[in-house]
Length: 478
Image (cartoon, rainbow, N blue to C red):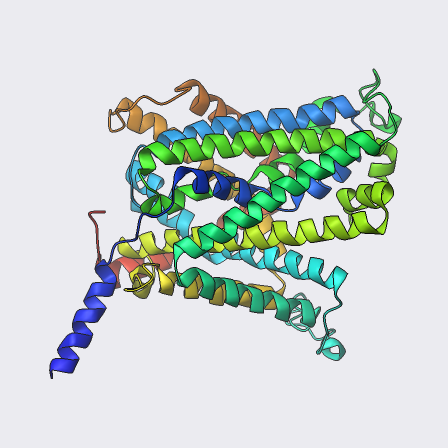
């Protein structure tokens, strides 16, 4: 009997153990940068070159997109003043608009956006490793077998198995303490930044001197009759993907020291560092290789790899491959850390699987939330459907960004947030306008994907009512 009572006490304790505040402002800055710097900076100049714009307008697209992201950074820095609880955008939406819209954001993150991102980055990481060291493909003979005509579980089996193993190992690593993940991110992100700076210097020093642009708006004369705004927005769309992820660090508010002070510093500084690197890198890429050559590389070529190979030979190709491996590995580690904190907070509010609110008594991490995320992400890897799913929820993902910005204005006007917010109200207003224009453009150009993504998100409605009916709120006073 005493053993049973002790077991019950341990279960109760795991639901109420607080997270440990061990992450300082410097580590948080590198988390923002590490999350944002994935593979986009190495290859997005190719589709941008294919738009037909000249070098100056491509650089302008990076700068304008970066400025919009900075507006978003100031917006989320303001929202960070709202609470010290974990959960990020989910928690901000809950406090601003209630449980239901917040749940849709968190559910979309678990079922598609977050888990799909983990699956996609793990696959890119494994592909990069495979380009250097050929991975075995044990089920190649079954690669033609499909489920419903579009799921091929045995296709690229070696890469998928390596992806799953990587997700499992990093999840286990994150279970054993946020400090571990923080140290790993600091090392990897520092290496990424130094690697990109080295590539920039090499491209600027070793490339043949040539003017960066001429006076022609379009390099491709066939696009002269196409709307300039449409083409420029297309170029910006490419750069947006490389900038995405700046809001994710807010999910870690429960483990950051003095989050109301340090989160704004981390978000704004991290975005500024990344924007500077991206603009310099793309300037260097276009100086090292003419736009016509970049545009001709095609979708399967990585611009940075081709440029490094051209300037440094085979050693340059290996260098960029290693850098891409580091970038994808670091981004994978950090999003596994971030997303689990959203599921923890959802469970604490009674709108997710109850076990996800447990915190490990020794490591002080949301270990069940990490395992749940791992299982679903691995299933998405094996199914190979993550790219299709994540493309469908671009519209809803940016809609939640816009809603969060509206929430900041609402909470500031109601004086719930009393602290002074830099660039308020200019930053959230401009972010709302720019994001709204972007959403309209997506809806007009990709109506089927946008509406299908919204429909997928709404499949969470019955789960919401199920969770609310069956779950007891564990901790509502964080």
